[in-house]
Image 1: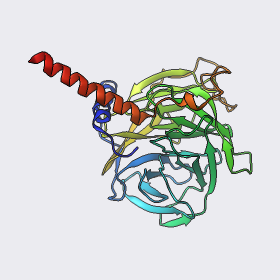
Image 2 (image 1 turned 90 degrees about the horizontal axis):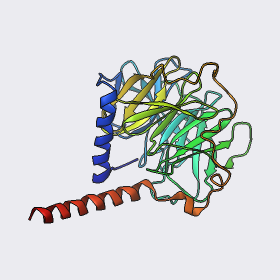
Image 3 (image 1 turned 90 degrees about the vertical axis):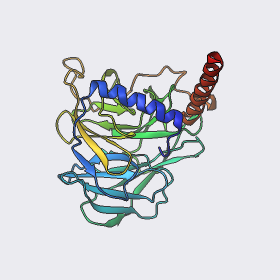
Image 4 (image 1 turned 60 degrees about the horizontal axis):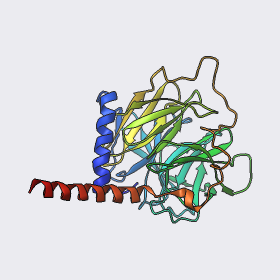
Length: 323
């Protein structure tokens, strides 16, 4: 997400304060030290290159991935995606085969006919370029905004971003040579999800501006939520390669990234180990899975406008009452 309006900013402060109540303020694990990285909206911890992480700026930047040394926070490389014109890159993820997913899925005004996910090998330190495999995705019922992507069991999952009525969409792409796919709704999702990640044990974690929610798979049952350290605008979440940890980051210059332990109590019932079968998160009824244009509801920005109108109206009423 790019610029946040006043109503959104007020609500973001509330979300951050709520998260702070559950997550004690800590020093960040590292900060991304680079004047070029001002709107970090995706984060992945490298599987193949120890101590490296990847991030991207969102709308307004070129199609490039920054390589970050987690020990220092310095950007130690930049990889350009050859032949790609970025629209609104909002997320990163890890594909089942270890490739990096660069998700150009942002659509604040719900007007894009399709969105894209680019697959490329994890970059090493140093500058370079890569020719990605580009997957084109379309939604049933028309466009919508999204800022979160993850992969599991041969599928790409995209989480739409709305205050209410958000959903998880999926497409089975990794076993196919095709490049264009139609997403299908498979689950309900929390509101205002800004990123997603898959933990080493297979659990999925979704974050909003102040909290993270853990889900089991394949049923995508909610196991619990926990607060994240307060930041300017919490947009990123990445699972550690091993262990019960996630890294939570923010937009802004000198962006802080916090290492947060996922509570041990947020686990599936005993006997349910990691399941690599196809997830069916919070299974939708048959009528819910057949989306139409009307199912999209209002995009998030429209809700901010509505909230702003309520705030202004409330202030006017208050002034009249005080007279």
